[in-house]
Length: 309
Image (cartoon, rainbow, N blue to C red; front, side, top):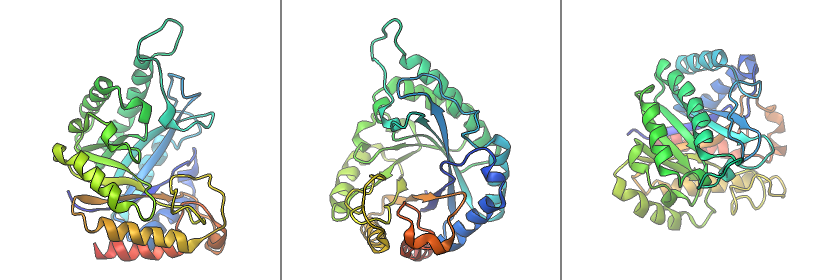
């Protein structure tokens, strides 16, 4: 598998957002400013709570199919390769890693089989779009930690997806959870979220390598990044961490991540987190403390790294 020079785009975009001229301009800037060759379109379906069984992917909280198709066509005109990443979030703000049900069915309680039916329908919908648009990869889930123990259900979901989509399939497990997935043999590519503290990358890569080696599959970090905030380099997964704006710390995180992973030829790239469909004005970059890199020092580090890979 070629090295993936990727960026996640459009997270949180709602119906109509991709139709705005600013969204296309943002995607164009993403390629120009970071030298990315892949765009990952991350879509966020919704379910009422972590214990609800209905996944809603038709509401105004998501871009429409026509919008997505138009944006994929535009991405192709920029010579970007495409991944589609349909994810789900509970509407009450609980992180999707906590979606969970009883392992033994109980009357009147929500059940795994109902959730997987709804979630599979969701994945199949976008698998058809991925096939229609010749997307290079489909990411069938992201950081859904509590669901990962349901091996039989995940295997069946991936097999169902293969009936609709002929490209590469991966699943994006969460940081530290690479050994939690017993069904890596079912996907084409193994991926996880690279939110590891500065100073600990060597240890984590040693651990991950031992886990994935028996599967003999390509591996990449489908997410990786760090907010531009003091202290975030030690807990890059904590988007709620309080601290002052700190571009230098974000830059140093990226420098170390790229330096250390470059020594491991089995790390086949990144889907960095994240590039918004609607950007803040570049003059406001110095005040932004999120994962975004537009107009920040880390942007230059990323471009230099991608241009040399």
